Length: 337
Image 1 (cartoon, rainbow, N blue to C red):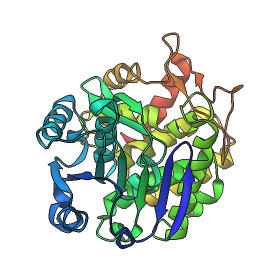
Image 2: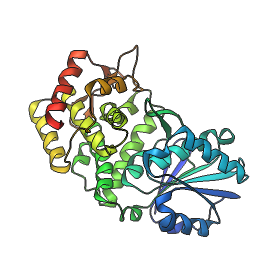
Image 3: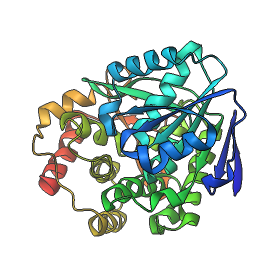
Image 4: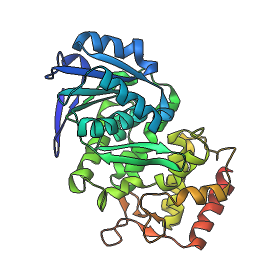
């Protein structure tokens, strides 16, 4: 078991979930992805004497309506300020439960138990919480840091290949913007997963609230989130981010040898295509809701070189002209359309 302190108030436990025999809270509620009810949720509730609330799987859980139902269920169970909410599931589950914890009774203790690769290396780390709206992904949320994260890579053994690729897309993104060694990481190895986690921690320690350096973690997500939105989440997060990363690599205007090296990595791992419902006009409309937008202009993270995002002063993103964006989308549509 490795314990890592994440400022301001989180402890990450990287190792077996079995080592957590009991929790130091008078009342606890496990809020779990419904697909995990028998595999993990019920055994953990029995072990910790916790109540159980099940929520839908995947992105469809991240709505105002589901959050409202969850809040009502917590009130009906008599939950108080000293009740700990335990999120058990993938990134969508963690996003929803963490946002609920941040607003329920103006904030209650939170523990995250990520069960997918993307949740362990990305969603669980850094205190971002959110739900979606019809206008776009993660548009309503908060920063709220969990008391603890229990990261047990043994829980990943049952994941289908598609879920591994979702997480791998986030590891590769980190390799492009911050630590090029991660481009060669084997995501099935605990050491590689831990290295990706530690890379993200180093970034959020310097910029916990997304004002500067942390924006580099949005690389690939400007295009990627818009693709998810316009497809109604029919495209997976990993596929959307991978297409987004390659398109934003194109926008970065790297040397050809660097571009081709990155393209080779992605083409060897992913079989990518745009959603069947793709329309450029819909994508451009979705981009207008990106959270990096400033003065009416959508801003993109760019690479300076492989393993380093361009700082642009300390903004770490820049507006692009309609011509630049149009050329990048021409390339994206020709490559993945």
